[in-house]
Figure 1: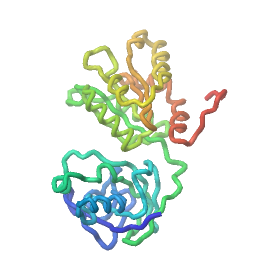
Figure 2: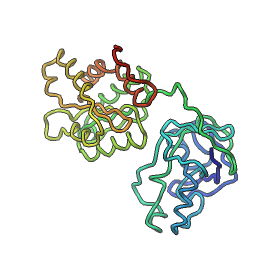
Figure 3: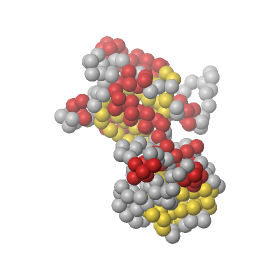
Figure 4: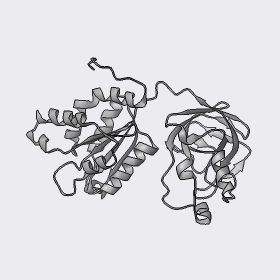
Amino acid sequence: MGIVKAVCISREKGTEKKPVSEGHLIENYGIDGDAHAGNWHRQVSLLSYEKVKEFNEKGGNVQDGAFGENLLVEGMDFRKMPVGTRLGCGETILEITQIGKECHSHCTIFHRVGDCIMPREGVFAKVVRGGIIRPGDVMRVMENDPNRPLHAAVITVSDKGYAGEREDLSGPAAAKILEEHGYEVVETMIVPDEPKMLKRQLIRLADSRQVDLILTSGGTGFSMRDQTPEATVAVADRMVPGIAEAIRFGSMEITKRAMLGRGVSVLRKRSLIVNLPGSPKAVQESLSFIIDTLEHGLRVLRGEAFECAGQED
């Protein structure tokens, strides 16, 4: 449990937030009047009061809302809470959707004192149930939603797709299959055949958004620009060779060229990353070989299921 120390909003993006007497949280939107509210996953930002206190003790001298936080809370270390954690405050319910954030352009505080704690200590949440939050209100960790769906992201790796020279059909094909099997697809994107960019997105999705399943499409062939497997292995904690082997084994029944596919499957923290070929047909075929068995492994990763020796799915 914790105590809300400040409720802050900003009318414009890119400006420091200012304390207000109360915040009106709107379901699946954010805080009324805050520039960062909207139909996305970062509706409300939260920061631990103790982290700001430590920063100020080192000479930071910042005011409430200076880091861009909507809710400053004492007694809760948000950084240790996984994505999916639900927080209750009065009648409101928030669900954490992202841990930390990328900082593309340094804020005013960073330029003034050389540091900003929001990218590494802040978290973001969506509003599950709206209501009023005021300074002094008690915030508590709630039981997680037992029906929370598995979350997935799809990355298409294609120079031409990224440049707008080719319509991406493989990514939407993968997303459709995932949704048909009950997944919530939280992000889709196209990146060029650039390993650094792909690695950055894989790390962000696994570490910050803590997505259960990340599918990539494309970049698994013999072309010198095909570097998806190498980028995937570079961010891996553990290998899961059986998934990639199952895709190749099933695909070999369709075309012998499947032996030329170099896709890999790996784990990074609690995220499974699977490389798929680049065509919509190959994506559909590949997923048909593995989709029914993936859920058990992903539930084990989440801690919601256990390995069962001798049982066949």
